Amino acid sequence: MLHWALIFFVVAIVAAIFGFGGLVSAAAGIAKILFFIFLILFIISLFTGRRNRI
Image (cartoon, rainbow, N blue to C red; front, top):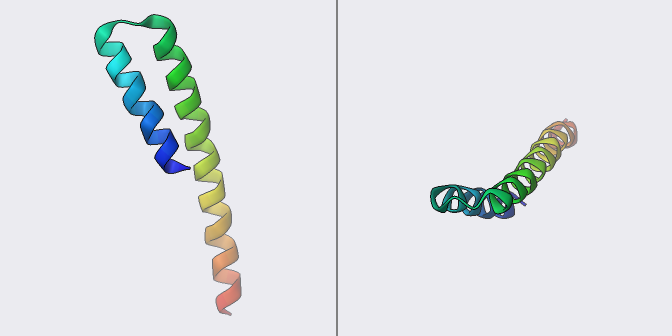
């Protein structure tokens, strides 16, 4: 999932360089959503992984 967030981030940066306004906002929005989903899943897996070691 982080892979997709990075891809959309790169697309947003490239589109910003070329000045495509609509594409920039769409790619940045998707990248932001995927980043937060990845962050939440990472935190959940961090806590559940610690519980299994005890």
